[in-house]
Amino acid sequence: MIERMLFDLYSGARDLSLAEFGELGFGIVRNVLPIHSGMFGQGTYDARGYVTIHTLHRHAVPAERLLERTILSGSDPAISNSLAHAGQTVHTPTLVHARDNADIGRYVRRYDVWNAFTLIPGVPVGTPTDGVTVWTGKMKRGTKMADLIGSAHQVLPHLLLANSINRRLHTSETGPACIVAAPDGVLLSASPAALALLSAEWPDWNPPHLPKPLTAALQASRHVEVGRLSVSGSMSNRLLLLRLTRRIAPSLSPAEQRVAAMAVAGAVYKEIARECGVSLSTVRNQLHAVYTKLGVRNKTELAKALAGQSNLEEP
Image (cartoon, rainbow, N blue to C red; front, top):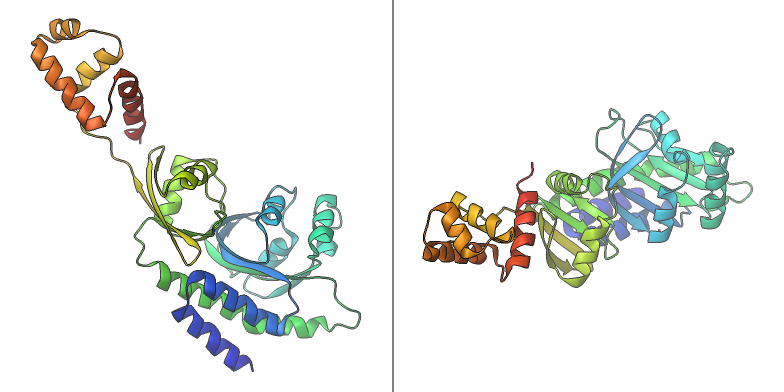
C-alpha cells in the first residue's frame, strides 16, 4: 500500500500544479494518519524555535487560524521539539510542551490541535529549509502512538522531497522574481529574488502573507506599481501568479532636471530662462520633454513624479 501511495506522490509532483499537488499530498497523509489539518512550506528557524515562513501550503488551515498563531506569545512547541530532533519525524503532544503558556493552551483547544507530527530537516540555524506539520485532535484511549509515529515517518519525508520537486518544476518558467500565492495572499512559492525585492521594499514585512499594500493594490488591478516595485499578476487554476521587477526611474538630462525642479518650486518661464541662461522656447521644450517622459499633465503631478523618482533612485 505504501509503495503505491509513494508512486502517486512522486507522479503528482511531476504532473500536478502547486495547489493540486498539495491536496494530493495531504490526502495521502490522511490515509496513514488521522489528521484534520496540516501545512508544509519553506522557512527559516532560529535557535529559540521561532520560524519565519517564506512560502506555505495549507490544508484545512484558514487564514484567521494562521494569523492568530503568528501573534501568540512564545515559540511553537511542535517546531521547538522538531528542531531539537532535526531530521527526524517527531510527535508533539502540544499541551504537554506548552503547559505554561495559557495563550497556546487556548489556541490548542479552539482549533483542536492536540497532537502535531512534524519534520524539519537538519540544517544550520537561519538556513532556508522545507518543513511539514500535520495535526490531529485528541487521541482515543488505547491509541498506539509509536505506530502513528512510524506511519508519519513513512510519508512525511517523501512529502517534503516531492513538494520540493513539484515547486521547482512548476515555478521555473515564471522568471527570476516570481511568486505563486493563494487567493487570500498566502505564499505557496516565492523565488529568492522575489523575497529579496519584497523585503527591501517593506523591511518589516513578515511572510507568508503578501505585504498589505501590495495585496490592496492587486485587488484593484493585476498590474500595479507600488513603491519601487512594478508587479504584474494573473490568475491560473485559482492561484495568483506574480512577476516582480524593480522600477527604473525615467532618465532626465541635467538641464531637464533643473528646469523641472525650478518649475515645481514655483518659478515662471521667464525666471527659469534667466536663471539658466536660455530662451523661453528652450524652457518650454525642456519642460514638454519632462512632462512626456514622466507621463504627467501639470505641476502637481510633476512634483509627485519627481518625489517618486527620487525614491526609485535610492539604493
